[in-house]
Length: 123
Image (tube, rainbow, N blue to C red; front, side):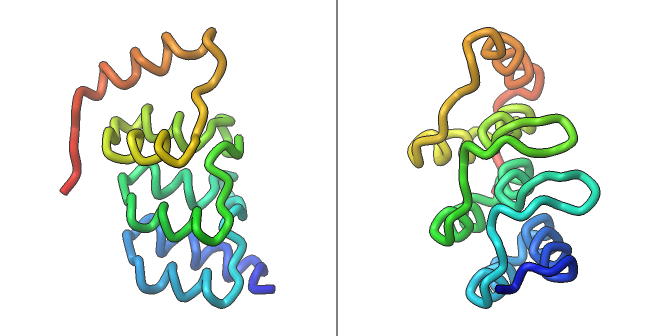
C-alpha cells in the first residue's frame, strides 16, 4: 500500500495544486484517498472541496474517498468545507454523490457562511 508519510504529503499537495494527473497517479499506485494531512488533519477530498476541484474530487471518490468523513483541525465533512469555502459547484456535486448535511442545529451557521461568501464560482 502506498500510504507512508511522503505519499500522504504528495497526495495533499497534488490536490491543493489542482494537479489531476499527479493525484490520479498516486491513487493508482495505492495512495489512501482518506488519509489525513500531517498538520491540518484534513483529507484530500476536503482539500479538493475547499478549492472547488470537482474533477479531482470525482477521482478521489472513485478510489474510495468517504464524502461524509469528519476530519480536520476543525472537524468537518467535505460538504461543510465546500459550503464554508463558497464552492457552489462542489456543493452540488457532493450532494449528488450522497453527501449529507450536518445536523439541523449546524445548518443555520453553514448557510450563514455560504451567504457570507456569496455565489463565487470557479472556472
